[in-house]
Amino acid sequence: MSDRSVKKKVFRIENPNKKNVYNVLLVGETGSGKSTLINYLTNYFRGGTLHNLKIAIPSRHYPATEEFDHQEKDLQDPTKSKTGKCTFYNFSLNGIDYAFIDTPGLSDTSGRDKDAENILKIMEVAEMTGTIAAIMLVVNGTVARTTSNLKDTINMMKSSVPDVLLSNIMVVLTNCYESSVNFEFKALNPWTISDKNRFYMNNSALSRPINTWIDDPEKFDEIEYAWKKSMKTLEQMVKKITQLGHVASDAFGEMRKKKNEIKSKLNAQINDMRKLYVLQNKLTDLQHAENIASISVSSYSNYRQNTAIEIVDMLPTPYINVLCKNHRAWVCCHKCDRFILPMSFCQAFSISTESCNKCGCSMAHHFDASYKPEKKTQTIEMILQETKQRYDESKQQQATIQSQISSLSGDLDLLKKDLDAKALTIVDNCKELQKICSQFSFADELANTIAIMKTDAGFVTNMEVKADAVARIDRIQSLTKSLNVNTKPGGSR
Image (tube, rainbow, N blue to C red; front, side):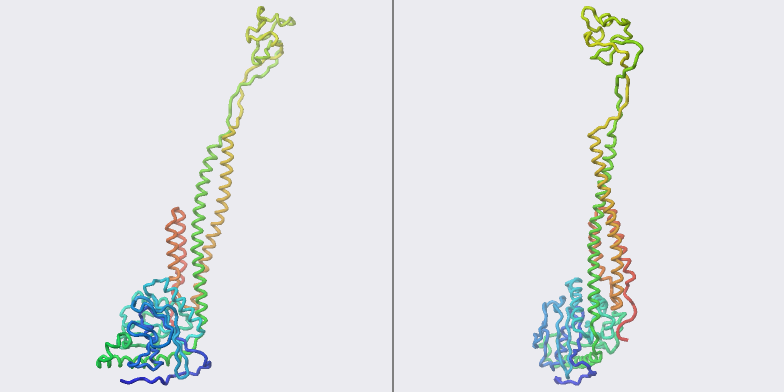
């Protein structure tokens, strides 16, 4: 049983700025072995042995022995990410500084929203470091098939690593030797990872309690073999990290800003769609109200009526007629022949009563006239005031509603044009982002937005509005067809 010395000869290149640290970003799905890799690195840099293990991150089997401020939690649950935030593990060897950055595990049971949050953390810390020497993708090498979780993790990484760092991607396959690995690198397509950037580690020493092998010579020999092989692999890994040098991490900041801009515009798209539904429903209500007002206008439009009335017209005559003041429509004595004699000589009056035999009025109420009354029928137009008032009110209401419909229709047209313009802007933003990260996938960003839009559309009761909503969602999806992930090869060549 041999121990390793703290002092090791590590290949180094001339570093023009000795203050620079070789920052290495560790990423992988939950349970891939990132924390165990950190512990192996701790033993490598701090001279740990199988009899004196150096533990930076506590696990189910080993408590922490080093002073690192780890973020481990839920140590007993392998389905949950144990790392809550990005944590720096700083080491020095032969005057060279290295920082291995442990990140939250992806694709655990917390769901896609948590993954999105963790990806943002990873990108932010990468941007913060200023330079990145390597992005280390940690994968469980025993996985024979690419599980949905691993596939999601790989896709998230493809969509988050800028092209400028593709040649600095390293893959560490845990729980295996190169001869026993099950993982197929074609799962990383179109990334191409050179053989020199592939590393295989059997972390059996820390994957089981020490009391199960420390006193068993056969098991110990097996563990020691894997341990020595892993330490040699780590030496090669550190050598490769030093060779890769420093790559400015500004691209992460550009990606973060553009992703946030896209998310902001997608959220605005959701809000504008909801506003569209409200306005369209209001327009439908106004159109219904306008129909009712139109019916009212029609029903009250007959406020004018033609009525036949009798009138009395006075026709001139060449003779004298005796008329009554009280009965202007009557002729009491037509063509009276008494000439210039007094009224009392008129045959129309009773001598005894001195009253008119026709109208019964006294002689004093009668007079001679050279005209006679004549009844006629005349048609006149009458205005039904109550009906006209209701007609005027309905007409005014109709005019007001029509004005509102015209104004609202204009607002809707502007909103629809704005929605279409914003959708095209989002596509343009995604294309700009793909210039930085050719493997950026808009599908994941869009999926949540489309799901919300479809849920909102499901609550729309107006069939015409619903059809417009569905068509608009389909158009947004069709726009993304031009944003299929670029399939050109990337990474180390």
